[in-house]
Length: 159
Picture 1 (cartoon, rainbow, N blue to C red):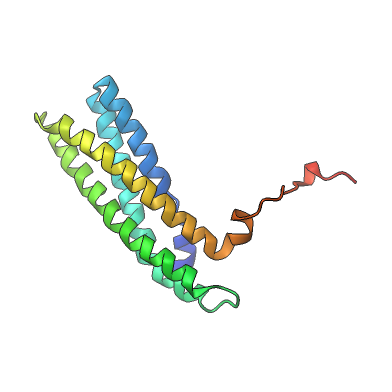
Picture 2: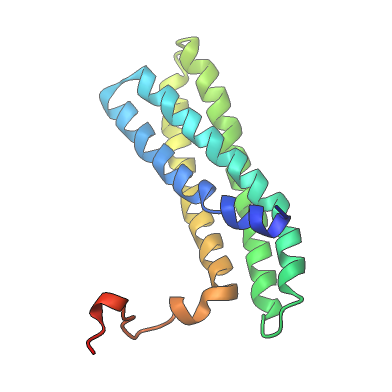
């Protein structure tokens, strides 16, 4: 397994992990369930770890793509710039989730206030990571993403 393969395997984890963590956290706050909030923090921490792996394998993936004819270097650069910002935001959410986890276990008065802040941060992080993923998809899948034609599946083709 090389960096390209690892990047392709892991790059969706921060996107879907962050939105899942945010939804679980929102539910935990609504129901005032400390166990659910702790589970949400676990998901957000795993998503942040996935963000680190995706970011660290990105250079290897970019290098491999630059060897392929027809790949626009500008789109790679735009994705790299977005990925750097997504990495920073993801780390902030991950670190905040660790702090929130500790405060929740200690039953601190600050735990619920921090959870609300982390919810906001995780939703913002999701938007940044989703945009980064979209830009990454444009590098190799621009024709599918921007297609306004209906794609026929084998079962929809009439002979």
